[in-house]
Length: 124
Image (cartoon, rainbow, N blue to C red; front, side):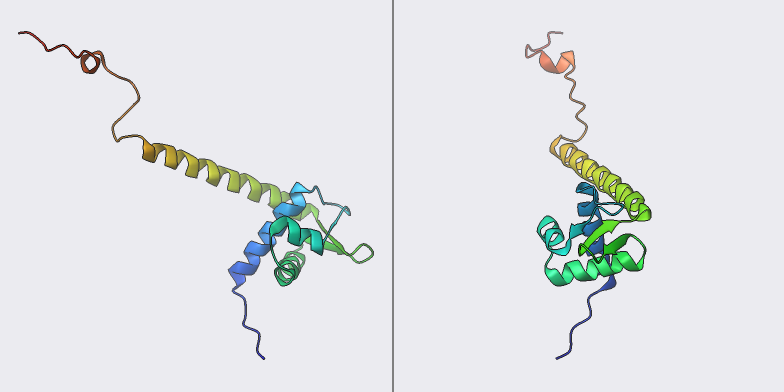
């Protein structure tokens, strides 16, 4: 049975999720997280965790500790995970701001002019 190839960008997304999970757990410089824990933290299945970790190791972002069967971030992985976390936070802020802007009527500044607030008819 042939195994379908996974698109490269999907594996990269898995590696990003794993990098952020390792960063959140402060798993760097020989303080690792097991593959099972990574699956629970990221919501990825075992195959996705393995492929994502392989991808991260290939690019020097993760290190595998055979004695404890755990993964940790390398210094390069820490730097890239921090940058990725900041980029995702900025994207989330921009999305939230866009939702707020979409709820406001166009041309509305939130300030009511005195002419608009006076309900009495003008007499000439």
